Length: 246
Image (cartoon, rainbow, N blue to C red; front, side, top):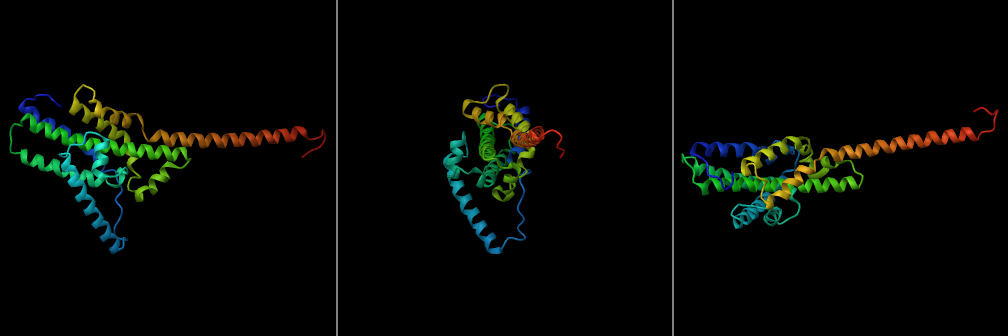
């Protein structure tokens, strides 16, 4: 836990717990990879060139932050864009690559110094902050789609070529992983203020109720329409002269 002194026997278990709970937040198992078989070679080449340029730029920006991102503003500064979804996987790649390099350098140590353990924790926090920034972005998009009366599942299927269409289906399991990661990093204490708003945003704005609300509204509209038609028929029947049959 941040700021805690652990026994040598507990240090690597602490690192293992962090990595275990961090993994689901990296979205690797949740995204739908677009097939490249039908992608024209020229487009694939342009996509790869853009990815390399984007990754190189973000890598330089991350170095300015010493690979420690404390809030959404830092994430925006690194990617130089408000649209986190366009860069999130490349950013995760860079952060995890740096974390892997750090761990490789420490694996020979039986005991970890407090500053070495803090480095691992800070790098895990950076990944967590990126995930929370992504979640906030998706929540905002879904809220706008709902206000526009659009089908959220359909919009997710079209959004970013459908890469994130399955992300909302594992929101509950990722939420549990987030809670466990926070427990590993912060213990029984609340997350520090600079992380708390991000964590609470992800905790209190689940995806599924938005779809449920849209479906409920549509059902109510259909029921009201049916009821209106029935009342209109009843009124028409009552206004007919007596003795006249339909």
